[in-house]
Length: 331
Image (cartoon, one colour):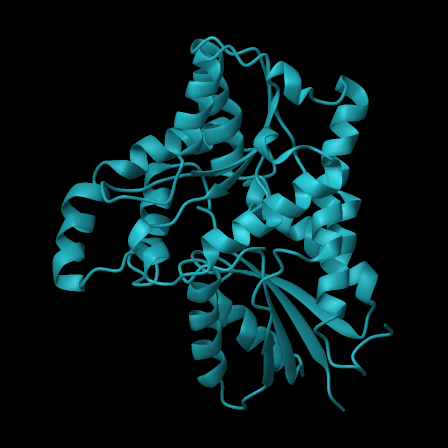
């Protein structure tokens, strides 16, 4: 008898907001050639002698700002999404979470579900837009780990879902819920909506990575559905790392520019982050908000859309059902 497992896979998180924990996490993350595309002989000395002695302490301070009594927000919301998916799919499907870096490791989760009798596995990247440095990296690890198992399961993988109707609905429903309380933005008065995505190196985009096009697709579908003109909805990119050129325009530069122009109202949403994490809760809600207001801007609102909101967990269930084997679960 066949049994199916669904594994939700996100980037990862340190186990605690301390410099040693962050150092362990960053060493694994920044050693991946899919993330830092440099020869090991060139990158390893920089990582060990320049990055890891300094960055973990500063990052740990930021993690402490967003840490909850129950732990990492990214982990808590990932667990909530898995719980909602278990309820949606029923007892016939095993649902687990894994992290590309840190714990629970992809290889450990794959080994666990196969020990529990699962011989069909669906890998679900929690990245709506595909990039080789995100979904590509986790699929590399997952497929390598699956190939190393004593008994090879049948494996399927979702690539991306930047235009999935349920996903777009989840984004737009969060916007509409916010606007029902605060009023719709007025583009003629200069109000703007930023959709901020994690950036990637410009060289990666120039080399054919489809990420930029998939981000722009999501933005255009959101703008169309909520009825805002294209000039009122801006696509920007955040979380640059290192000195090399990265895909832009940068979110931080854009919010500062809008602030200097006297923008009275700025709404920001991060469609590529299905769970709030350091990049949304500290970088956007704190750093970008302060930058906007200090530059002379007015109201700044970060709009949460994913996490455990029903519209998103319903969308996730629909995406997963569309890729399961026909006899795995009632459709």
